[in-house]
Amino acid sequence: MTDVFVTRTFVVSSKNGLHLRPAEQLARLANRFAAQIGLICESQRVDAKSIMDMLTLGAREGTSVVVEARGSDAQEAVEAILALVESEFAADRKSDEKSEAESGPPAT
Image (tube, rainbow, N blue to C red):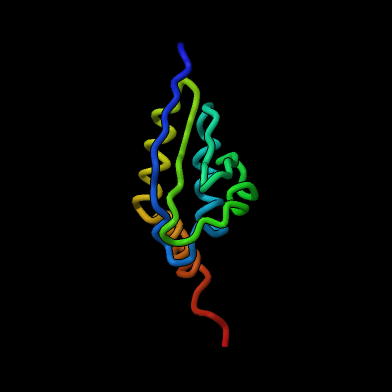
């Protein structure tokens, strides 16, 4: 199978920017694919499979970020990442809500 190269752009919509939780979720998703996946913010390119790399972008609310992927599953990888971003990392919020529900109310 031939290598496919796919590139798309998204805008960071979270008021907290691309912080630890969404970076972790994005890296976890990216690691499911064989494709090489990168994020580009301004002139900096980082590995989307690395949480620490993504945090160095300092991508704040309103920042344009380019997702690029190269490999046999590049199209699927970019589509999955954009779906995650467009959901505003909804799975992350659901996970937090579930954890809070399981642990009960905060101690006072």
